Amino acid sequence: MQRCQCQLGCEAVIKTKGKLYARGHDPASHIFTRERKRRISKARRRFFANGGVSWWEGKHHSEESKEKLSKYHQDRPEEHNDHLRESVRKSKAHHQAAINNFKLASKSRIGSHHSKEAKRKIAKAVSKARRKQKWLTGGEFVKGQAPWNKGLTKETDKRVAALADNLVGHPLNISRFQSWYPNDEFKMLRMRSSWEVAFAHWFESLQHPLGI
Image (cartoon, rainbow, N blue to C red; front, side, top):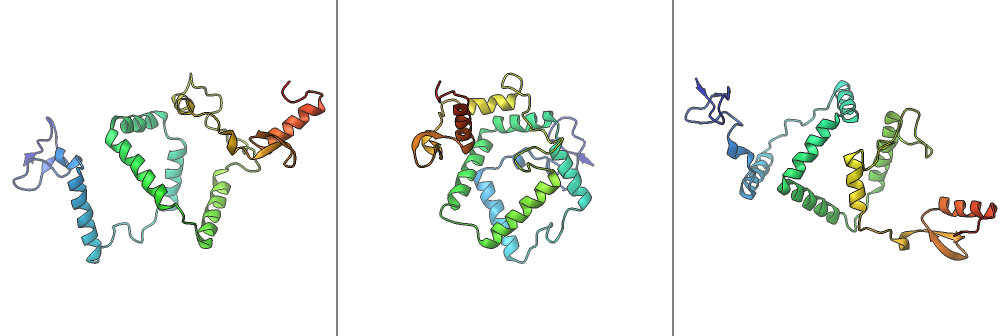
């Protein structure tokens, strides 16, 4: 019985004669060069072209598994999130690949539109998720459903600090504001929402002219 030589103290057993590493322990197997990814992709295409079927074909998560996954993602420990973010930050190649994939996905959708059937399915899925997860209803949070950043500041939370840093150097684009004061007919001042327009009129009712 031969032990794996990937590192000192590895207890994995080599089952294939002439190999130095146990299955999945070869350091080179974790380096995905462009050529290796090309070969894997080619092999997968050939597999399916010859009638191969995915191991997950026709399978579904049980309701119990779905509940466990949902609960885990809702209550995932912050240490786990920190570990994931740190892993992405350390891997510049992974980070750049994610950005490139996002750009390609966005570009592929330019000029295209969802079909009526797709829109119906999306609306149905969102409606179901809102009922199950108790999302926002009527513009207010359901009792017991607090926003994730409630009470947090950039001084006390790294996520809020990261969001704040991303806003630096990106001033508001006033031309995108769609509401007008005092109204759409007499366009004197652009505002971000009808709520701001209503607030300005409320100020006027208190004898506080706008801007004072």
